[in-house]
Length: 152
Image (cartoon, rainbow, N blue to C red; front, side, top):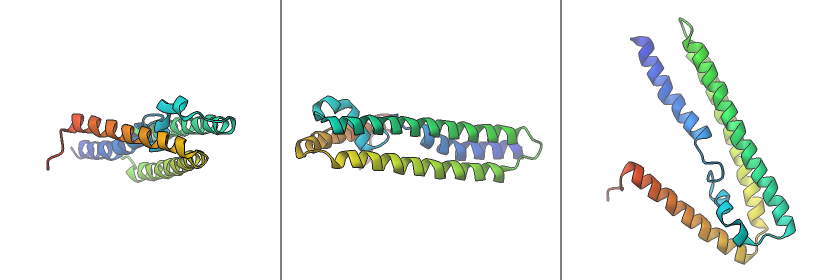
């Protein structure tokens, strides 16, 4: 009975980490990354295009690293659960490390998108603003559909 309780507790705790780490859509993970849908409307110059390609590659690499880190955490949890007396503190330590790595990758990727945005003309910034607003509205609509409309 105790083991079942701890398994359920850990599944809830680690499930949140896993969802956070790998549940983010590849290019919808941050507002500036929503620009993928309007890339042609941005009319990037050659320098911006090179920077765009590098940022997209960095975003994909961060996403892949997040998946790999979560798999490492999942493997560690499964190994501990196979033991008669699992060391959940060890799993928590790994989870903390994964969370820290994810935060660092997120910050690096965000900063790369912000550096690209800083090169935009006022017209490109208007396109970006409109795309981000539309993306946020889509996310809010999706959230409302899945969780019901917020009560006022």
